[in-house]
Length: 418
Ligand SMILES: NC(=O)c1ccc[n+]([C@@H]2O[C@H](COP(=O)([O-])OP(=O)(O)OC[C@H]3O[C@@H](n4cnc5c(N)ncnc54)[C@H](OP(=O)(O)O)[C@@H]3O)[C@@H](O)[C@H]2O)c1
Image 1 (cartoon, rainbow, N blue to C red):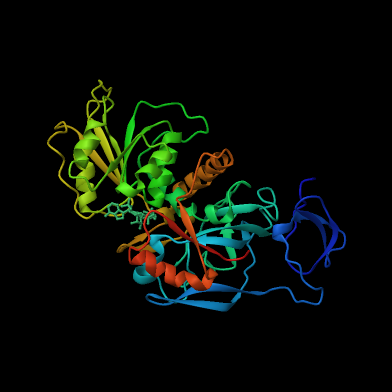
Image 2 (tube, helix red, strand yellow):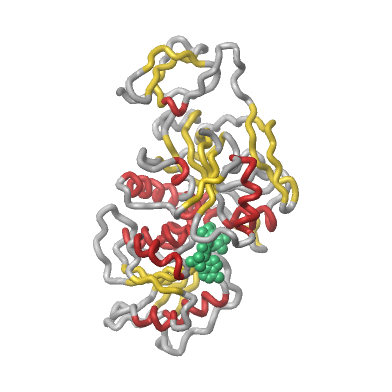
């Protein structure tokens, strides 16, 4: 098959040839001089008399804690640096209920995580994408009163470099469950904790990391990334998720509900010590747990001042005091990352205004290319997921289930278009 010619799939199209396998050759009726070849999945077949679709269904914040499914929203056109994606599946995050209840305004488009196919290209994106490519990622949903952004809709607009190509062996449903988790885990491990970047064939690093809350979506992806960075991984979860985290190659999996869980972590640390911790739950109890686990290396280090880094995904309020077991001259650095800083827009959250960070954006663009490579080599898996009924119309109920703590150790995924 020749490389597909790039052409936006808008307006009526005429099929001229049915190719082998999953490809058709189609001729845009408005442009008789150009042909394009594209994946069957990306083409909607319609009678020549049918007008092109101009509106879409989308979930919009109607009021605090109230979503509205509208069917009259315009399908936007990408600017030169954007692409338009036909949504195939979307996934829920705890951030959906938090945003809906706590920090979004009426009119905002809902949803973060998605997977779909590219259906229209901004004028400057033809080198990056072809029509019909399978992609996944996250968008900055719930942003002020912006109904154009958001993932819970039939057509998603996104920056062309802030989306990931997905290989054929990963279903749209599974791919929809990785966007926010992988982006957050990437920021936390490589920007906050400054670990070595992940490789398809990692070289072992003689260092250990504790990932508290390994059975979260972010934590399960962080375990896989940290292993691909060559680190030894100790992680915590409840008993029912232990086998799953072992299957992700975590070296030690400890039940955080055990009375002696801290001791179990300390016993498994070894001579390299424990100087880097990612806390995916991040409350005063988990911070206290993590601080007790910090352990200096037994090996002589070139720096005079031992440094420990505690990264959290949420603010933890007041941090615990430095444990007496640590050297008097040691320093504990606390970093909290916020995934939206990579997505180019100022936002208000957790009682402060966050500026977009060009450095975080640049990191994410490069990190996504690395993740694409890891995905194509079968090196990353999403959290287990359940495909729910109802499409966009079913999402509000799912958000309430996540809010009420009825969803543990799995993601809820919704098919938007078959
Ligand atoms: N900073 C950012 O940019 C950012 C981005 C995304 C998410 N977040 C935040 O990060 C946190 C994790 O999000 P996620 O989507 O990855 O999580 P998730 O997939 O919803 O995690 C659910 C799992 O968390 C575990 N858990 C819940 N409460 C716990 C507790 N008190 N102690 C220990 N484990 C507990 C449970 O595992 P077990 O069943 O094993 O107990 C549960 O299955 C959330 O607070 C979210 O808001 C922050």
